[in-house]
Amino acid sequence: MLQNKLNVANLNTPIHKLEQLSQALGKSIYIKRDDYTGTEISGNKVRKLEYTIQYVLDNGYDTVITTGAITSNHARATAALCAQYNIECHLVLRGELEAYEGNLFLGAMLGAHLHVIEPEASREKAMEALYKTLESQGKTPFSIPVGASDWIGTHGYVHAFEEILKQEEELNIAFDSINVAVGSGGTYAGLWYGNEQHQTTKQITGYAVDQSTDAFHKKVTEIIQQLDDSISDFDTVHINDAYIGLGYGQATDEELQFYIDIAQLEGIILDPTYTGKAFKGLVEEIKAGRYDNQEYILFIHTGGLQGYTEETRRRLQRMLPEISETK
Image 1 (cartoon, rainbow, N blue to C red):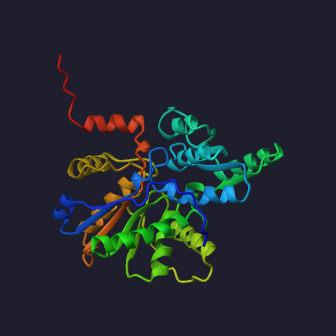
Image 2: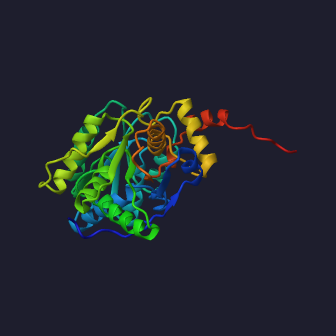
Image 3: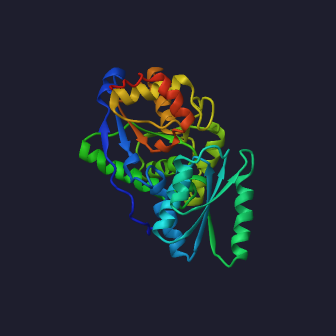
């Protein structure tokens, strides 16, 4: 296990009970606000990057290459930390260059070099080509996988699991399950490994936002085995792919209405790419009786409000009350 990390996130992030929703569903539902980790580097990404960027600094790299969707929270968070630590940053972003907003705008503002590739193009091939170009220029680049989801980054959520254990003592409760969105696997892998190391009976449940259960099971297994090759039993890896909906970064009107309902019930904004899909999945599974043997349920809010694109905001506006103008 790596010991060195940056200390840039606002930790520990708080846990509080969702009172209205708990009453409605007959469960004690809590939320851990990892969206509070910081403004520029908000969400779950910074926990992983605290270890990754420290590794970059410790090993003499002067340039970072990473990748994600054109709306990537991880890419924007990487750009922020690279700016803070004077590391050249290159972002390989897959998607259509339609609007200069959200994380794309923030990444540029933070000084990252943006490389936009076609939606169906291979991120890995684009990163490899860029790596060779940067090497030929005399630079020493380090490639970070999507979401910083590898054996290095996943340390951040092993640490987060230990943080949760201490908060349980303060709250005088024990969570039966920890639930989280799964977009690249590193956050889930860290939580699962932390649970395995501490030998608790918690169920660690992930809600996939794009790929299948099988694909994520394979990815999570690979990350954990890179971290600790002594582990061979992965039967308790539980990732639900029933709530992907229209796909990554896309939301149905039903999903958008759910996000509005939660915002107005609990004062919490879920994003349409990660936390929204996952939290809707959790609520639906509770309603279906699949959490009947659990009383204390924790959901981790992993951030990502920049995922509300102009198109999604226009759709939401049609679902909200009209603005009243007073002259």
